[in-house]
Image 1: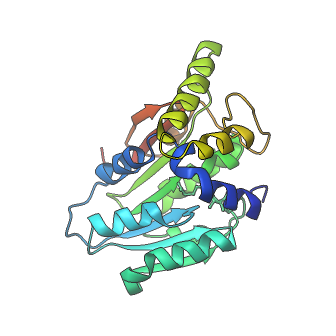
Image 2: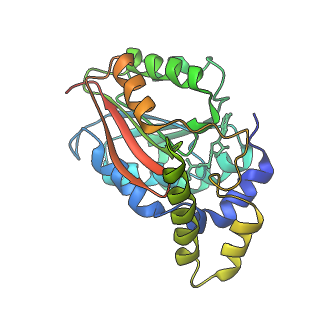
Length: 235
Ligand SMILES: C[S@@+](CC[C@H](N)C(=O)[O-])C[C@H]1O[C@@H](n2cnc3c(N)ncnc32)[C@H](O)[C@@H]1O
């Protein structure tokens, strides 16, 4: 994979500054879950990182279980430590996002979630994945995604780049060294595009999700070139 352990280390250091309104973004995913608080349902998370979103989901839905998949050993270690209090409601496993050998884990799952991970796939692989998820989810299931979004127009790219820098600076008021780290790492994709990052326009995501078989698709939140969007099996 093109994501390296060095990326995991930098992300771990700067994420709270580098991800615009991270807590709000995660809460939008939690709020979009189409199950009642006490329902027992099964979640698969793609690129679970340090387990923060999984922790929010398991806390909000006390009968839910989750399989967290990630390609980085250090991220899996952090997720394992963070999620240990949830006991056997959690499994953390390695995976390669680009391979298909983990797709069976999604059979009969109720929720697939992915935060800041799917932009590592090219357009064709995103479309295959959306179809694979739609075909495997249970009938009330949903795919909930937070990710970078490719601006469709130069004016939108400028706005995303500026908003992202402003958000990072504002989030670093108490730790200005992290804003410097964000700038030095050239983390703002809209200023410093990295070929390993392949975000797609929100309009494309929604069309692909609809074509994959989701009855209702929508964008639930968008800020600084980041969006939360979803496909729901039941309209
Ligand atoms: C930007 S981090 C996001 C982590 C977490 N989801 C969050 O929102 O804080 C991207 C995560 O995706 C994982 N990842 C990236 N590319 C991957 C790939 N090709 N295969 C498996 N995991 C990958 C990384 O290890 C990392 O944990």
